[in-house]
Structures are given as structure tokens and as C-alpha cells.
Image (cartoon, rainbow, N blue to C red; front, side, top):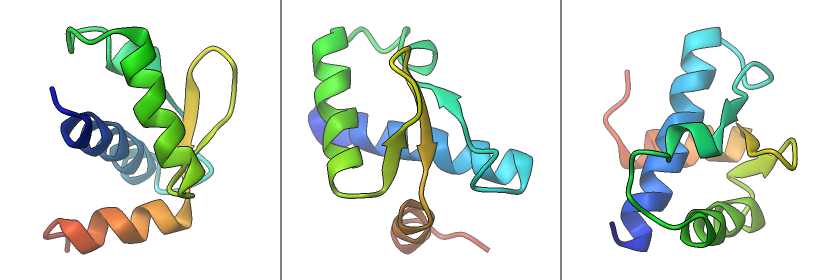
Length: 84
């Protein structure tokens, strides 16, 4: 996967978690769990997750890979996808 695909997949995981629970606060997902079948190194996954965190669309919640989408992340996901 290229970096943009990894970032899109991570952001999508956060968005789906928020939609599933109906809340940004409930949007916690485990990065290492969702990415284990991507065939990418942990370093590459973390690089892209850190990028998304630095631009404010996701935030780290734990050192074990827990992440949560932000309101800005929801807005960005919906801007780039057809969402009702």
C-alpha cells in the first residue's frame, strides 16, 4: 500500500467506529488490530498514523495503538466521501 492508501484506511476505521457507536468519544479503535492484515511494517503504519495525528484528524489514546477520530477527522472523511 502507498502512504495515501494507509492513511485513508486508518481514517476510515476511525470514521466507521464513530458511526457504529454514534459518537466521536466512542470512536476508539485499535490501530495494530485493524492493520495486521495489510502486509505493512509497524513503522510504516505508525508513520502514517502519526501524520494523521499531527494534522489533527485522529489522536492517539494509548501506547498500545488505540486511536480516536476527531471532529476535524469526521469532516475530512465526509468531505472526501459521499456520505449521507
